[in-house]
Length: 210
Image 1 (cartoon, rainbow, N blue to C red):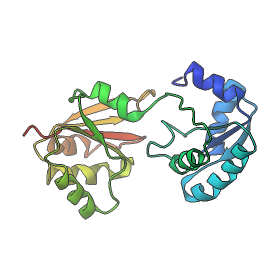
Image 2: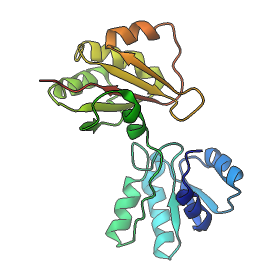
Image 3: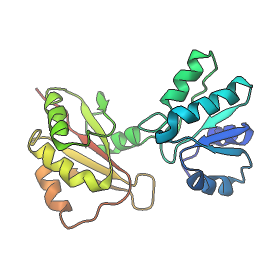
């Protein structure tokens, strides 16, 4: 339901649609009765797929790029393709749409005049701790994406680095089970210890007040 009329019009008119997961995108195709050619474009094969799509673009084929959720290039595949197209003077037409970053920020209740989006934190906890320490003096709302299985570990790291900050966990935004959970790292660890977090998670951390 978050698909804009303009985005739908583009999807109806292009020859090829590149997507992260053809099985996932097939649901969208079936809902809107799209009959375009569908090809996969996912991170492990991003370089290889970029070459394939660039060949199509050079031949004059219109190609649309979509994500499973959110916006291409924003912690999703797409950057390599966009850069390659620009290098070949191929026109890029961005289609505004859903983004967890701005959606979460609007409803979080944290300052919105300045924010810093950092994508997914490092895999290793020590690297995440080092990153958060380096951000401790930034007076902007910090925004991260997280897989649900990492949320408790991430909150524990925040507690040991930015313990005085207010945090907002936004999950399943624009879906049936949309939820915003607010509090300090300590409070959230207590609230979530007996709760199973599912679905996409966006974490917002209050910036420095110094």
